[in-house]
Length: 312
Image (cartoon, rainbow, N blue to C red; front, side, top):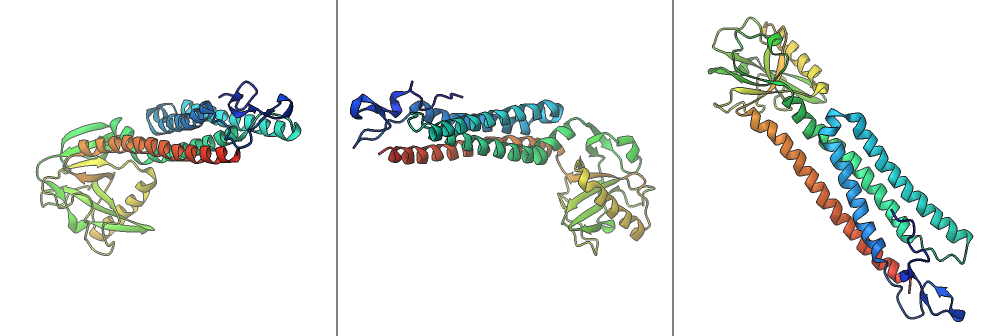
């Protein structure tokens, strides 16, 4: 960051023409020259800051080394504060030294746009990580289990399951579905096989707001897909307790047991679904990059027009 915006070493801001050959911010009847270096810096520095913070908050560094992630974000925040300090010093010099030739306008603009970029990247990156990348990394770090039979396998045996492919004939027992309401409606249905009741229903399909909660009408995920026979593990810790309460209600209502229930999204291809989390994470990152650049370009164009008119 260059603290010499508008200083005496940059004649773009000033031209000779005042009586006595003194420098003045403008010459009567002419526009002040544009500071192309300042314009380029104000266009690219906030945008690059946004890209760095957004990437650090969105992707694997946030997951594997959160301390280093927040350290980098804090260093970028210090850069924003440094630009504000330089802008404040320039304004102070202009106020205390009426003859000062340093123009703080671009520095002030740079500070505010960097602040907006840093704040926006921090918030959007955290949301992108929470909703897309963290579930992807969580599931990726868990195991995949093929040919799992709900009748002979217990939940304790698959504690580290992320993706489960069930044996042929496995289906949802929609007659034993249940819902628990706590603002949202937490819907569950047991994953079963055959017609005989199971000793313990440890595998459950789940979904939000896709049942009535008063009758067995579970319609979450790919419940009506005849090819669906796999599950993608629920990774939201804040939801698990409410799904467990729905299972307890089902135990009481249907006189069944669920000794160690595990929760899954019922689907045909959990691998493709998991990869869609990653695709969404990268998609929102690229969308944020292009949106931020367009916004910054618009702000710089408006500021350039406004500052040039101020110099008339």
